[in-house]
Image (cartoon, rainbow, N blue to C red; front, side):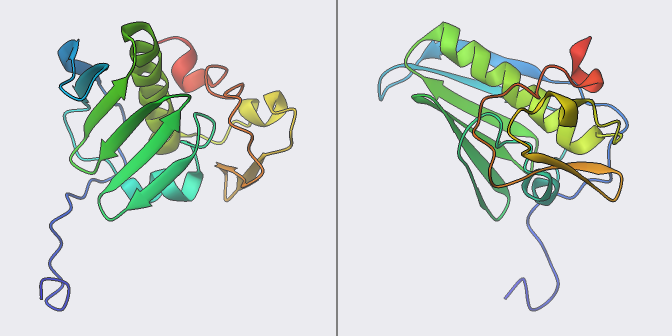
Length: 157
């Protein structure tokens, strides 16, 4: 009924000029086993941009539902919500910290990409293309992550 009336429950956000991220609750044991963490960008995240750019693919297999994205990294998993919240779960704290970090960097890349193309040159698998002055990760991405930390947007944060 909400869709018929043009009302969305998913927060919307204009393209940000900067993003701040912090793990809000720290790393703690999860009832289901392993370690979990909650983080936040403190503002709404455009999940459609995450999907269109494919920026979660270098981390691992990504899937999308309305208002949320999920990505698997080895045996770990993270969810990014349109509200700007990020939840992660892993078997150990070291792996979870790495996952939360690369999710943060990948969201930054998706939302703040300036189209410089540095990552294109670092992809040995020809899985990155430039479209409309923005980077897009193609379906043949093997999830190696080589393009993530070479991005000038994230290299020095």
